[in-house]
Each structure stands twice: as structure tokens, then as C-alpha cells.
Image 1 (cartoon, rainbow, N blue to C red):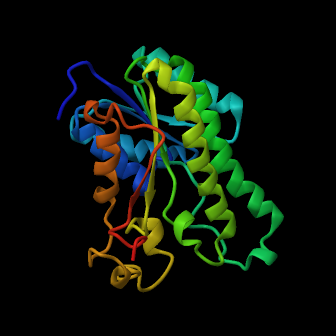
Image 2: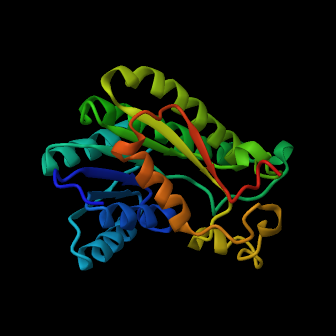
Image 3: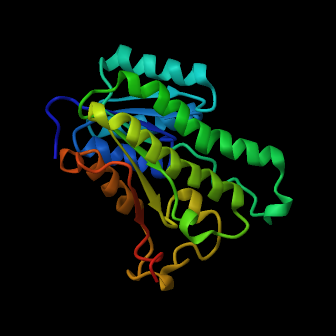
Length: 250
């Protein structure tokens, strides 16, 4: 699937991991990609990867917790491409978190998680939406299946991703009249670089609990995002799609 009109896709947290996989997937669909990350070096590595495959891509350093930084990002996108069609809110604190009983979580760590995972999703969406293509714009928020399972020792992360689901529903209500859809994807444990570093048995973790007896790969999540951004998903909004191989209903 290619897009002759040169659709522009902004992906936060695309300097590595699942964000980089999103960038590769959307570029393969023929989109122009804005790779946004607080890690400028990682963002440039992603752009180099995309450019080697002939994609049009731009790296921009952004701190999603800062309004001025986010607004500068959107200005850069519009100045470079003159349009913005899809936003994937993927930036999140995840792999560096300390698994801790909820009564012992460091309040400063709680605030950092909420600032990036929840506030960042809001700030990027708030800055992007007024300047997105209408009708036809797409906002895709990356939540987590941990919201449904209530993963222990992970309360700040789970709470931040629950906030993302709630914000998705509110934004969908407020943007639908202009033909912009807002949906969330809630991945299960997925074999990214970050996840692989969390535990020795990452490749088999949770596989026995799923209806589909294999580990989740980044492409499983990327395909869902590409679909939600497509014309075929134009009547889907306010939804959270759980992509976890069927663990949550067993």
C-alpha cells in the first residue's frame, strides 16, 4: 500500500525499539516519516535506516514533556512538509523503570512516568491536532495490555497507560466532527530491544497464557497501526485494540 499524496507520519519515541519499527512499517507503506525522540542520535540512526531504503525521513529532537519543545516539533513538520496526516504517540518510559511495590514507588519516578507517558501524549496531540489534515487525520496512541492485566510492581506504568486509554476516548469525541480518528493500541509483551533487556526468559515470557502460542514481534503491533491509519479504518475511533495474542480473554 502506497500513498501517492505523500502522507506525513509523525512518530514519537522513534529513535529505537517499537518506535523505530513503526517508522519502518509506515515508510514501507509509502509515507514520509518524522522521527521524533529525545535521543537525537537514535533518531538520526532511524532516519539513516529509512533513507537507505529510499524513504523520505526527518529526525527531530523533542522533549514531549515540554510544551515549547512539542510546538517547535510541529512547526518543523509543517515547515518541512506543509502537512501532517498521522501522529503515533509512542514515546514512553518503560525499560528503565524499577519494578517496585506500589507503596514504595519513588514519587519522582512516578512524576517522570506520568510526564512522558500521559502528559506527553496529550501535549503532542494538542499541538498536532489543529494543524492536521482534516478530514482524514489519524492519531494513534500506544497504550499497553498491562492496563487490563494489572501487572504487579508496575503501578506507575500501568496507571500512565490507563490514562492514555481515557484520553483516547475523550479526543475521539472532540475530533470526530472534523473527520479525525483517535485510537489506541494496547500491546502485550513484545520482543523489542527494551523488553529483551528486562528478563532472561523474554523470548518465552507469557507465551503459554496466549491463545496464539508465540511471542509478540514488533511487526504484530506495526500492522495494527498501519491499519488504523488507513482509509479502511476511517469509521473506527475511540477504540483500544489489544494486540497480545489472546492473553486477556483467557
